[in-house]
Length: 253
Ligand SMILES: CC(C)(COP(=O)(O)OP(=O)(O)OC[C@H]1O[C@@H](n2cnc3c(N)ncnc32)[C@H](O)[C@@H]1OP(=O)(O)O)[C@@H](O)C(=O)NCCC(=O)NCCS
Image 1: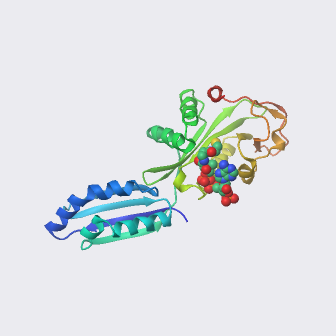
Image 2: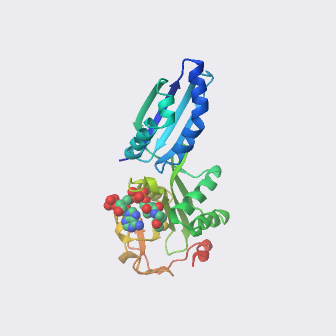
Image 3: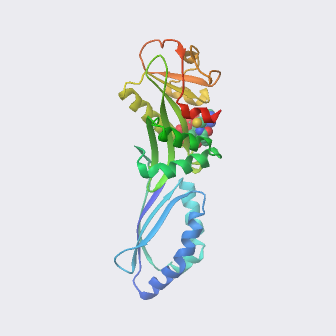
């Protein structure tokens, strides 16, 4: 069950249709954006005063079907039943891209909401401010931000990055969005000559990418322990030695 996108037009034919849409639309938008599975919901007047463009995104097919059922039973549904609709409904895929300057605020909010605290959101801001955001990828769907992952340089025996934090919006979890962000980040790291990526996290999750707890044992850090892992991209045994994160991580301890 993945993302759903609806695009199309609402097509009125009489002045009464226009009156009904203008009267009912604000409440319809307000109620829809409150639905937990709604990612974006844009209805805008076109150059034709009787036609509106419609662009909607939902977290899952179940969320979209719940929205349709609620809409049909709503005042909006009853009042606009006679107005034409030309809609296309399709499965959606998030786009994974490096962050742009205008993404910074949305990344902050996404991390703060996903973690339920501002520590990781602040960490990303500090890494960026200190020039230590080696790679910051966002997953976007329409105008909605669904996920984010950050990589920062670490001092280690080979050229290395740390993966942290990674976050995905709650309503779209378990769809492989974090996995796509992390795989894309690993590919960029390889292309840039990075030989090792360190992460502190649940080995049950990070194992799928090739992260290893045993290989990290000789690479010592304040984070060493059962959750300290490395992904070896070097093609050889990693030399032992200390690993030091970017200064921004100090604020987390
Ligand atoms: C962790 C998180 C990023 C995963 O996002 P996601 O897009 O749902 O992840 P994916 O869909 O790629 O992966 C889902 C898989 O990971 C597993 N998984 C997800 N979170 C996990 C966790 N915290 N521990 C162990 N396994 C986890 C799921 O069981 C699922 O396994 P499966 O593929 O075998 O069914 C998301 O849950 C999140 O933002 N959590 C809050 C922030 C956080 O804890 N971040 C990680 C620490 S930096």
